[in-house]
Image (cartoon, rainbow, N blue to C red; front, side, top):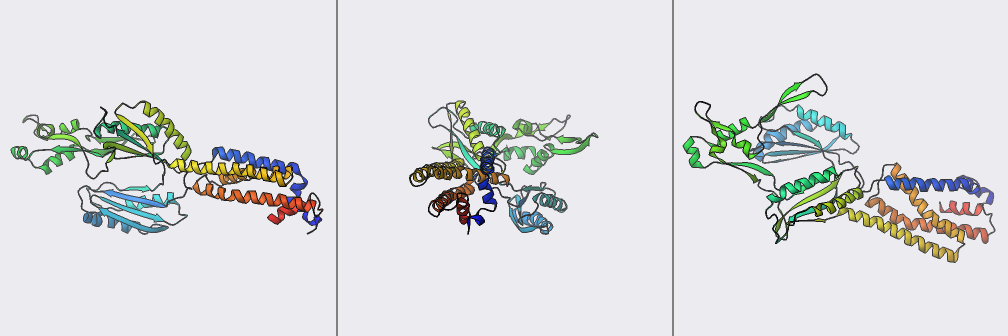
Length: 440
């Protein structure tokens, strides 16, 4: 290839107009810096699960009743949804769950509305069953976990119930600070337990089903229509549902104004109790509660980690002597370590390249080879940001792998251009253009 042929094309134009080349490099660096500031950092890339969940609760129903009365009617209505790939269901005591998996590229917003419409068309569900819940399955990435525990040997809380309110307040604080989701593990869900002795039932001539019917009739929360012509209109509700033990004690079981009233609190013991089958967490033999912090698809892992660290500093200062707090399973630290690995390798590689090139090549060649490393990475970040990408474990691995390629290519191009210019007497413009074209 002759010098004249090599001095044409896009590369030759930039070689003949160094101002344009320098402006392009400056634009690459500036857009990369902007992308670096605003780009999302997360553990894995974003992807849509393409799943919708349908769940129905029916208290007291067996697994076979759930299968025959709830799961099968819903499956028959949902199996013909558009773009549906797979449907699976689970029927257990008191609960039915149906999972709908859609094909890749399906419009999940439209699929959710269609699923809700189909579920609403099922009219033969049991009357005692609760309203079906149709939700789109959303993926949350873990950030870290927080353990709140009772200290051994201190005069602080010794029972799990004494940690309940404190942990719930912590969850509310973290949500208010911007953490997308906080799951509590080890805090049993509570229920209202009503205990009546058989002797008392026999004395009053009552049965447990009769008492349950009266409690159910007097503890309800039902919609009663809407009032007003504005949008949205005000909703009326008939709300007499009891939520505290004192409220259940006021429920009338028998009698009236003339014969005297018998309230539930006069004949039974009413107290809060933990539901069976809950997960318990202990730390050094003492009761503990675990809070799992997660970020949403749009959230930033490192930003959530900084929020957590600031909250932990303030929360520890306000804890009573008998309560301890520690963080563990910090997933965000793995992402930070990968980022620091990239930065460390980049800087060390840059220094080694500069040192070696200054020994064996001209100073100008060594300088431009070194400049090409950050410029290339800034341009890659700008493109990643433009196309909706993020800094995650996979993209960081790719950047680490390409670091050596960038350095090798820059050295080869620089050495090739210098060799052709010095030894073959090629034109100062055609030599670098030809070297770049050969690498391309």
